[in-house]
Image 1 (cartoon, rainbow, N blue to C red):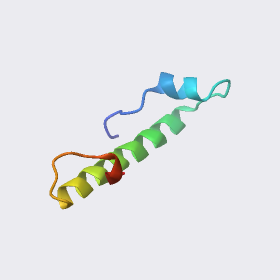
Image 2: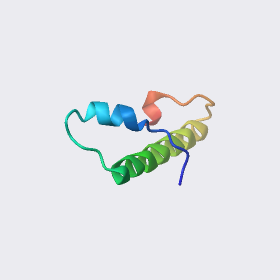
Image 3: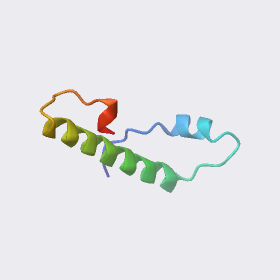
Length: 56
């Protein structure tokens, strides 16, 4: 499993009165990790060492 970037308590807070299953948090974390890796790759491909919003 990739490093945890998602804070479960914040997800629960954002979902209000909805229940949040553990597999949702894990799936969201995997997507977040993929997004970060792709953004880093894009920044490197553009000759930058700074990841920016436009890399998302």
